[in-house]
Image (cartoon, rainbow, N blue to C red; front, side, top):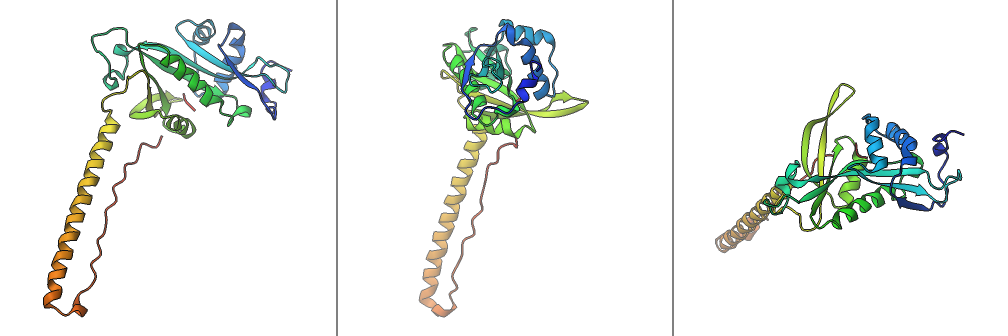
Length: 260
């Protein structure tokens, strides 16, 4: 049986998942999994950089109770790169000393789990490894990434893990002759949270608007009740109809958003 064909076997009923750094011996499987999972084709240099740790940090998931007997073969992975905050696209969303040049970020490059091992919490655990790594770096302020707009499962995953969707980037990806939007997600660490991100600003404004409208409706309702009470004194009660107050509901809907 070939190296990768064994991965198509059904996952064991009781997998024992553990996590480790990706190694040079993982190269062939890593290339194969990326090719199967992602619409974007990566250069071979990228994979060599991953397995040799050249400016890229990575974690792999393996099943110690694998049904095919290979208990050290990758069944999931996450790759990431450290970038300087001042050179990133999210510098304006960070609470940090702009005069310091050592502020850093962790950018997630790729994340994937083979199909037979999905829905076991492996992707969540891999992301937690990245968050812990970033949190242990005193100068790191956030973990961030891009997700293609139609990847609803990845969007849901990051939202569930408290990542903030802060931007929609038009035509960010170009795949097979077609442009696709992307969402930018951020997870702040070590006090890097922005005083007020764009989405938080919108939320704050809408909250105040809602409170203002509720206050106006409340005053109108009280005035109407007072006027109605005065009319009762001079009119036949049978002519007084009940007044109903209609409410306007204001809702804030986030962008409709696995990771490319």
